[in-house]
Length: 309
View (tube, rainbow, N blue to C red):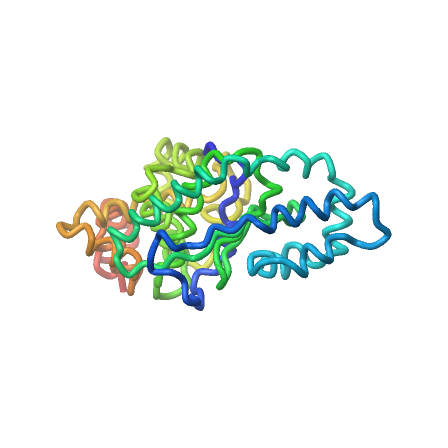
């Protein structure tokens, strides 16, 4: 993954996958791309040694919806931010000019948004906010939009692919039981469509590992996919082997890709991927794990169709 600042994509997504979508633009060219909070942050930063009061009070008070959305579980409050900034001044300084090339990325993001509009005409386009936090999150998604923790950026490599992934989560309405399969389809589906509209893959390390260990991982996933436990597949591992985090993104991508490739009407397929009603039936229709499911069911002396009940 080139965009090392966001190696743990789960931090960005925050599992806020059913948004109360406010009146986001339906026109990709009108979507908000907000960076004023970063300017306010540096105004406050440059005052930390010259004031007796906390300059970050003003940063939060003047903050956009992005700062407000980042405050509750990440910034916490101005005092918490002040403590971290004083302790890690040098680290913050590394990102002072990181957004210098953001205008070019904004143009690229609008092109990506336009690509989604082609594939999914009813798409909504949330604002993208660049804010500063406490080095505890690459970002998150909220009802107000996509929020990126700018202090985590060393450069802008991969940021457009990351925004593309996050954009898809705003379109998704995946139903069904809260089992591992559902969450992998959410994440893998966002990766698949995000890559389709941006041409960028954002999770290369886990995907490479997945392809190298495909047979073993597919066998394991078949035994786990109905469980609620995400360990070793999403958002953390037990260190039982050398696997990277978030292999669920990879296998969700593979299932989604298989489903997409089997459909004649590709535009309709995108709509169905975004609005999965029954994850188990979606898996069945994808055909991706058929041979592994057949083998697993045979070991249990059960029929293939019983697996999907």
